[in-house]
Image 1 (cartoon, rainbow, N blue to C red):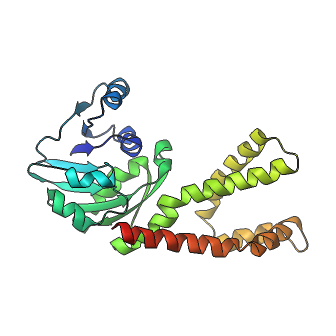
Image 2: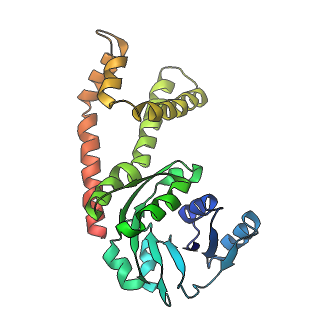
Image 3: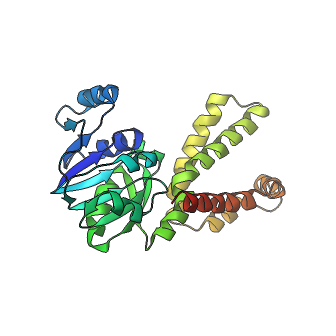
Length: 247
């Protein structure tokens, strides 16, 4: 399988780091970025213009606003788009291919720990999941609507989780814990919670930690006063509505 990666910004470069077992050609026009890539990946072909795309699985990793100026010659074997808020119908208008996939990775791809939502032509499902699993966990969804919803909890929620981490740190610092220690604890906490959530329902975990009259239930009550659940529910809905507007 020959892969043509168009765009090597943060997300494109994150994907590139996981594609070492594939025959990859990169298209990147920003000269300083090209210099970095040559040093990081000396054995990968890097071009500043898009070659004929016949025979390639094309990964589109450009900025969504750059799609309008995209020009491709030929028909690709497949296209995998990671353009946020960009429906497959828009991709099909700009690039010809035998099959199309839309995917939404997140920033954790930089650590190969992304959760990537995937949808599109079932004929390309297994190959797409294999490629996208190189940067973390890839999850197949049944429609673009489901992917747009998943954008909130997969693509945008890293910003919200970071806000939670910062707020927890602020709370600890406020009553005397050093900042560096608070962040170290919180990072380990997030990692451990991910492992727990793979096997157990969130409500069960919460109940296991919460004792009658204890410290955790006191904190739970304070969070409920701040409408923390409502805020997250509204954030996911707002993200979905914005995604539809961009599409």
